[in-house]
Amino acid sequence: MADINNPSDTGGHLIAASKVNGTSVYNRAGEKLGSVYDVMINKSSGKSEYAIMSFGGFLGIGDKYHPLPWQSLTYDERQGGYVVDIDRSRLEGAPAYSTTDQDNWNDPAYGRRVDDYYGPSTL
Image 1 (cartoon, helix red, strand yellow):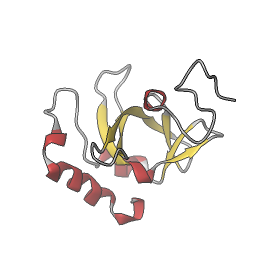
Image 2: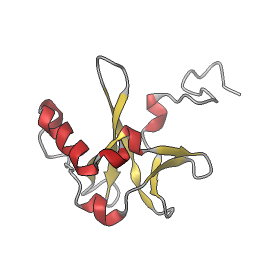
Image 3: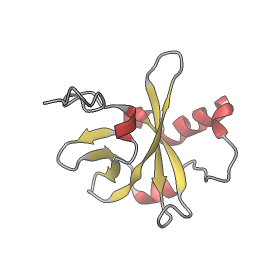
C-alpha cells in the first residue's frame, strides 16, 4: 500500500521520477548493465522519452551516459529494475557522452541519432 505521507511511493503502476534515478538496468540474460542516471521528459507531452543510463566506470569515475529510448525498457518486479533487449557489446557502440561533454540535447539531431541506432525494434 502506498504511504500517503510519501507522495513518491505510489505502490502501484506509477513511479516518481526521483525514484527512477538509481534503478538498475539489466539485459535479458540478467546481467546488470548500469543504472538509470536521469530521465529525459518531453516538455510538451510530459512523456518520458529517454532513460539516461550510467554505464562503465568505477565509483562514478569514467562513467559514460547512454540514452536509451524509454520504450525499450520494461520494468521487472522480480529484479527490481528495468530490462532492455540490448547486449553489452551493442551498448558499448551506442551513442554516449561523459560528464565533460557538451549538452547534446540542444541538438535535435542527437535524439534522432539515438533513435536510429536502436532502430524501430526497440521503439
